[in-house]
Length: 366
Ligand code: F6P
Image 1 (cartoon, rainbow, N blue to C red):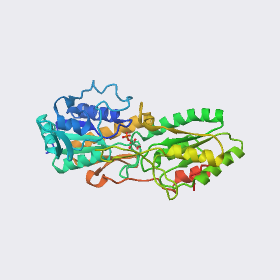
Image 2: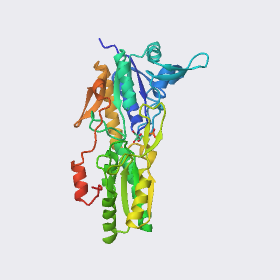
Image 3: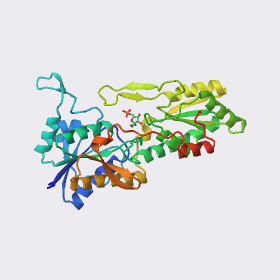
Image 4: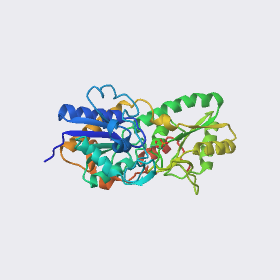
C-alpha cells in the first residue's frame, strides 16, 4: 500500500525561472487535494545532509505569493553530491565519502515518506541513486537550456528567451545609433536552443550554434551585404558553446566539485574582434550571462511549472516512484530516472526553425 502522508521538496543545481511555481504547485496539490504535510529542504542535498533548520514546513501561506518570483525560495546548491561528499568530522578534519545514509536518516527522523527533487542532471542522478536505495523519489527536470531528450520543453526556457529578446531589443537601438555590429552571447551549454530561439525572435542577422560549425568569413559576408543594402548595424547571436570549423569551444571557468565543472563563455569577444577586422566596422560584444535566468517567469513558464509540480505529486500518490515528470507532446507524462540521466538533445541543423531562419535571411555561418 502507498502510505505517503508527508513529503519533502528540494531544488538543486543552478536556479531557473519557474522553480517557485513548481514548489507552489507541489505544496498546494499535496495539501489541498491529498491532505499531506509538506516540508521544504533548503540548499538542495546539502540541506538534506544537514537536516535540522534546513527542513522547513511549507504551508499554503508560505507559497501564496511565489508564482511570480524568480529564483527559488528554498535556495540551491550545485556542488553537493551526498554519494561523494566533502565534509568535516567532529575533530574538524576534512573527510570525503558517501554520506547518503545520513540524508536518508534525516528524512526518516522527520517522518518524511517521499521526496520530490527539482533539478538538472546532477540533482536527478542523485535522485536516481536515492531511489535505488529505497527512497520514494520523483524528479522534476529544470533547465533554461531545454536540452533534455526525455521531455519536450523545460520550464525556464521561455523566460530566458524572453529576457534575452528584451535585452537584444535594447542593444539594437545603440547598435543603430553607432552603426555597429553587436555580438550577443547566449547561454545554453552545448545546445543551441536558446540562441536559435532568441535569435529568430529578435531578428538577428546571424545565429551561431554548437550544432553548426561556423565559418567566420560567411558571417562577415552577411554583415557586409547588410551594409551594402542600407542597414547600418548588425546583430549576431552566438551560443556560448558555438565553435568555428575545426576550432574549439571557449571555456571560461572550471568550477571544482560541480558535477559538470566546465563553464563555457567568452566566444562573443572573439567573434566581435574577428568581424571588426573582416568587415572593417566597429563591433562590440555583450555577454548576457545570468540575466537570462533572472527575474519573474513568463506566464507560459508559470503554467508549465504548475503542471510539472502538480503532476509530481500525482506520481507520488499513484506510487510511481523512481520516475521523472516529462512533457510528452502536449500532456504530462513520466519516464524512469534510470533512463533519463545524461540523455541530451541538440538542435537539428536541418530542422524547421533553422530552415525558416535561413529562408528569412539569417546566416548560420555555413
Ligand atoms: O544549465 C543552465 C546554465 O545557465 C547554462 O546555460 C550555463 O552554461 C550554466 O548554467 C551556467 O552555470 P553557472 O550558474 O554555474 O555559472
